[in-house]
Image 1 (cartoon, one colour):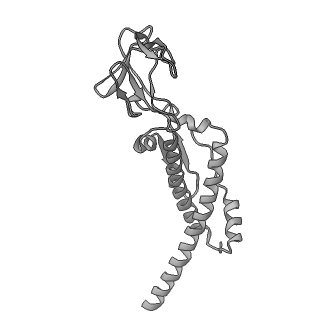
Image 2 (cartoon, helix red, strand yellow):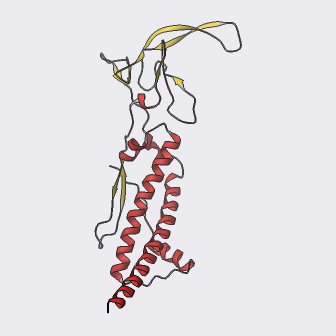
Length: 223
């Protein structure tokens, strides 16, 4: 599975904490534990953010998008590297994109920015034409015949007859992981990841100080 190559910058996180007047005086072990927690929290945040961005663009279900991304969290204090990987060809059945069966057509709405559209003959699947229908040209009384695609819905899925294939073909929607190929996406995700990581590391570090103070207090009371 391809990996999202985004690196968290620990030095930048330290600088951010210095700007925020945060202390950074933990011992080496506690610092590694705080860093591990911050990395793992950041991975979860980024998966949620990426999932939301994809669902803002495509009509895809949250669990389907989330399941297409896998997190490899940090379990070792010596190798503090987290990874988000994704299925490069992740796609859903076309029926998942609001497919509706009409009298002579099937319509879908794949992108939220687009209106519902009828599936046409040809295209990337090379769908065959089943017949033609008589329609009136917009703004005129003139009528013309347009091709009708050999598509239908059965068992909750969209099927079509395609060129060079004897049996009907079940149709799938677009690869929504093409989101990562959009301009400046990797750069924007990298900025968000490091900003969140910096804040999270400060939070984990602060939590250790508070916990340490509480342990000191409790220990002193017991003595």
